[in-house]
Image 1: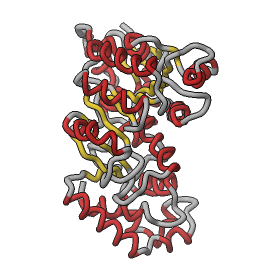
Image 2: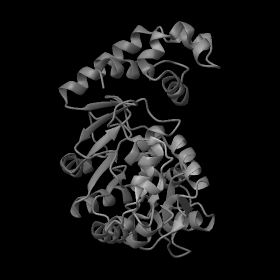
Image 3: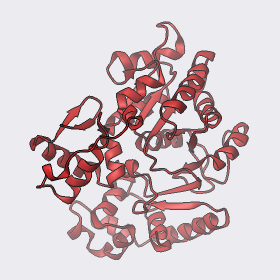
Length: 371
């Protein structure tokens, strides 16, 4: 991605009155942040509903000054600035209408890994929750060793998930509620350093941003949006983990929860998610892998004669080629990542293939080729 697009994207985040969804809509409509500024005097004609007030607000030298300073900081500290059109930007997150225009990233993990899970929970993790983190990731390392584990580097379940991931050779990414000029909480610095070698640190916040309360809520949408599935380990009746679970649902992502005893304070939230059908109950890594259809990756592929399907578009053929090697089907988010087809377009293509009698939709957003 060019430095110009980075500059324009960062400047756009500092335009007053625009907001996350407004900025995302402008970039999505015009194709880039650079074009938003290029066509700022005629935005109302090009993007319905955009007021002249927004067009005027784009004439903002101060926003560009801050953007330039941040890019200098990134260069000095070996931080990557990923914009929406960057191939390394998390493709799952890009499909969310409140996705950040730019992300700051240090690390070596592929943010578009084939399998991405987020593990979240209370900051007051009990021995029960800590044990779940360890056992779950130990077992998952056998069943799905290529998974990327995402959490928030916070106290409690977050940090236990990161540490268990490191111990089991998973790459793990911490999504921060502040800039990359600090680590909060400071007690987790050693783990964060290890994650830079085996995962990474990711944030939408510029340097100098404090870890204020509202930033943690904003951070949660990235945790949910960049993952195939969100797993809630422990949660009280209220808490950030439940917000993340709700966001995952709003993004049409799968959500899972480990149950606990009915009177345990930090199991109430998980039990309620399950009771309200907001999360699927799981008790093991095998439950997750089965529900997501990931176990098929471990099975030998079977071939299908391609000449049986002569009337396919190029994109339909790409989907069929993937499905023919996976007998038990593939989850829609995995199809999006593997084919680089946007999720809204993927849904339409899958519907067409269903109508042609070539694929079948299964539970959990999984699609399988009809043989």
